[in-house]
Image (cartoon, rainbow, N blue to C red):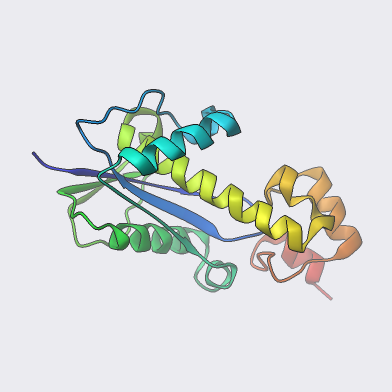
Length: 188
């Protein structure tokens, strides 16, 4: 039987923090009920499912691309880089890699992009959940270092509260300088 690896990313839209990706090869003999696109699940349900995925998957890996990499190569290329890093960390070789979206990272296995795959392919749903929970955990860690931005609430997305905090406190090293709101803020 050909093992399928699902891949997805989390954090392309935020103004702050790294972009995360996960790769998951589910065990065909260990069903996980409730897998869905991470955005359709509550935070507590995502955490519960993430634990089950880590326990039951044949192999899984989480990787990221830094803010500096995002600013250097752009968010699309940084997302693909994080995806490639996640696939390369798997300890089981997949027969095929299925990626959520319309672009594929360069990996050593057959790879295919599936638009809205996080809603229809369980392995991609699992990757979506691991990427989202890992990124959210990182944003909570960064909130402890930079509490005045409210990262615990908006996870770095360009909410009114985050934009207001940026006006008061300016940008710091976790902010993506290549993103227009940050670029405008830093312009002389």
